[in-house]
Amino acid sequence: MNNKERLSDEFLNAFVDNELTADEKGQVFTRIHEDEVLNRRVCELRKVRDLVQTAFAEVPSAPDRSGASQGARQPVGLKAVAGLVLGIGIVLGWVLHQPKAPELAAAIDAPASAPSRALQKVVLHLNSGDHEVMTEVLDEAENLLRFYAQTNQSARVEIITNGGGLDLLRVGSSPFQDRIRRMYERYDNLVFVACQNSIDRLRKERGFTARLLPEAVVIDSAVAQLMRRQHQGWAYIQV
Image 1: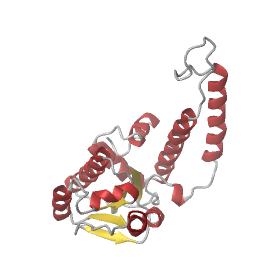
Image 2 (image 1 turned 90 degrees about the vertical axis):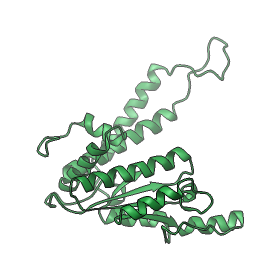
Image 3 (image 1 turned 120 degrees about the horizontal axis):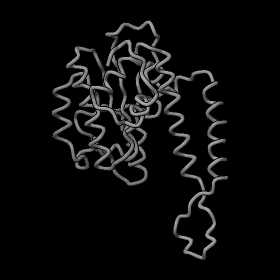
Image 4 (image 1 turned 120 degrees about the vertical axis):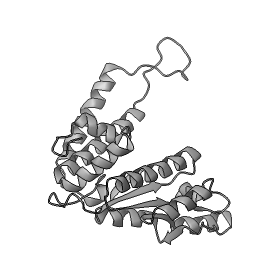
């Protein structure tokens, strides 16, 4: 990808939907660091995707006029779809004209004049205890770190866990203890973070104190840390 080439919305949509290769995603992160306008476009595309997914999830099924079982999903009427599209258009118009808020930034918030070799900073958020999601967050982190190393870019990556995601860093619960140790030893710019609030909640609700892997760092609140990182210009990815 040429650094001077304008990225199409189709390509950026693929980035937002996590459909690019690790190399392509790494290059997009680099471009976002350098270009405030591109950063805003990525934010807007993420908002549009979230609006569409939320809206379609809430569209009711059409009434069953044939007497078929109500459990079967019926096609949505044209009027409903038209109203949905109109509603999304109105909300989108409002979103695109709002002043930029750092806490809503889906990508790195850096000035356009930032040097091309500026420190790349990415935070990955894990709040699910699902095995496949845990695998995905570790793969994502390793792919990014490998890309930055191959392209001689300075980078920092944090994996922040809370809720069910805390299981990734819990002794006896994590299915990836050996992999986490290997990654920790290989990448000195990778940090595994556990949420103290989630640890306290486990103790209160389930009556035990979570034992964490030695690679884990504990912070006060995952939500607070995510907000701090985004204000500091870190790219935010929720896996």
